Image 1: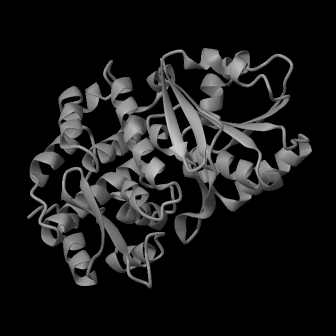
Image 2: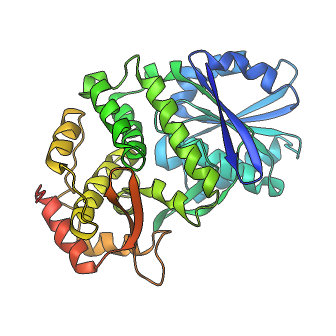
Length: 359
């Protein structure tokens, strides 16, 4: 097991990562007498009993079970979770445990950030995707007009990442989370990207013995950006590579069609094409998409997606300034830059990628 220190503004906290990390939980929670676990139906059915076995015996524990996936990040579920916290008499010395994937972590963190103006919470991720979302303190729920539009920057006390839970993930969730690891490599280091491609040449190899080590590297990439820019006023926005279109596709589908990672993969290919036109990126996108196909990703923009509708969502993206959407582009692999992109170019490449064109 390894400990990675996250430095976010004035707060430092550890990420404990490794097979069997859950065994440390009891000792780490000994100062809290009232615990609220927020999980989802899928993770609760698989792992809740194991979690309970590692909680302090003397602590009062109550469990709120949210719907799976993005359905957990609605105003209704947020209110229900707050109501549950009140009924369980949580106070400012209580702690909320986010036990699940990225959606659960976002919901639980936002509940913790706003309940009594902020109480302690910890992240106990169970997915690959959460190696990204559990670190850095971005917590939020969705608005019908856009993803993660209602939220806060609120850091956990620590992250406990037991990689043994990854063995129970369905293939679609393995791919969804792996997309964020690919993103970390594209914005940080071509050597890291090559390492990932060698270690995971196809879909059948995503869950292998090298994955925990790759996830640790991904966490360290994110930690570097968070250390420089906790509240995303500058370079932390580079972690949104692929997310401008990705979030728009998710929202346009009602947060129930594409998974987050599937949408972000499409968004990354889109921004690679934009980068070749606008920043002079020299990168073999065809070879890259061939690898994505071997991993099981569908990287073309869905046929039913309408540019005008998607563009309206992109205009509501958090990076947009003065009604001009901004994108994370690459000058080269590992050298991201923020830039405005002309609407005509966006429309042209949108149609091109919808047809599968990469020129």
